[in-house]
Length: 128
Image 1 (tube, rainbow, N blue to C red):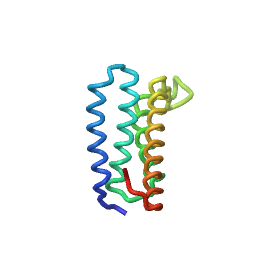
Image 2 (cartoon, one colour):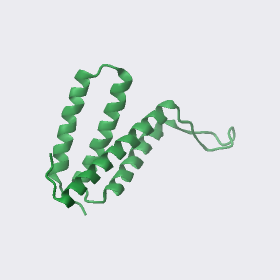
Image 3 (cartoon, rainbow, N blue to C red):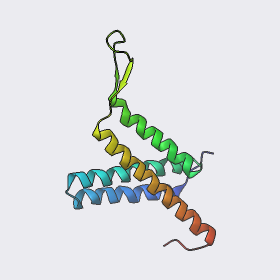
Image 4 (cartoon, rainbow, N blue to C red):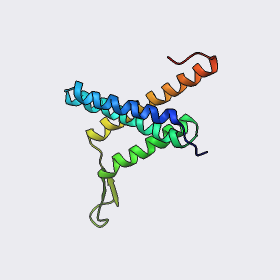
């Protein structure tokens, strides 16, 4: 179940170089934030797959759950039950939904890439 896969580590190093180049090339703040979030999610997926040999969908769901838990944590407010009807209030704003969309896009991109690599290996096609 737990194993080490060097190809994912090489992919992480490559994505770190792409992230550094992204800082130099793209100056638009929104575009830079979106692309860097997507790359970071793909890197987190690759990190999970580098050390844990599970199906890609399981790794994708695990990464999404982890990232959404981290993203929603600042929006959770514990209220006084005597003043409010609810003990916990979650009030996510636009920032949460924007990050949720980029996180989902990153996982979909990682899963599609994983599937394409797996299909190429089954067909016996060389990797470009």
